[in-house]
Length: 282
Image (cartoon, rainbow, N blue to C red; front, top):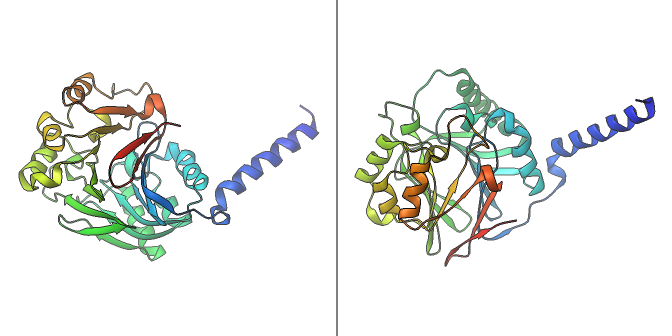
């Protein structure tokens, strides 16, 4: 390869790096309605919520998907995350939290009450403190806003035996529509949710399938309570776990839900106009 070609390749790589690093040079536009995007981040989890000029992120994907997360923010001109929610302290959900806290303006960090000495998680909390980001331990009943949308924490079980079942579970309401996010909550977490939350708050139009479409989540009782029209499944292509499990897909079919998967369709975009939710397939 000639030196000329090598220099040109180096110049291209430098330009790409600059584009990713200097995210502040672009401005995000106000979003009409509520946009919910389940990003294609392989076998991990990251969801963007935007309403008006407000931006929330639920989980951050694993470190191997950092390019996809940063790229999504850049493509949308996002330079501030008003609230970053880490549903529970597993790497596939918190892997990019440190870089986001360091490189972006983050208003508030919400974390699970689950206690752990995991090094990656400790470094996330230390970075938030260093950056002066307000950190709140989630508690059921707390409410927040994303523009004109309302966020309520339905469950954050500090007594859960496993991190998955201590996942922060959120309900996002916009107009007449509602979205439910359950993190990686499995049967014990979902049972606690059903036992403690009023039926009208569980009835939602959209469900992000728990634990990447595992058979141990999105149980029949929860699906009957939620009665979702739309279900989004975040999982990696040809992943080692066999997600989404066939039994889960059959349960979704049984309740008449339409589901979409990141492993076969890429990033999934849903937009609510306050009356109904529309799936936008690019």
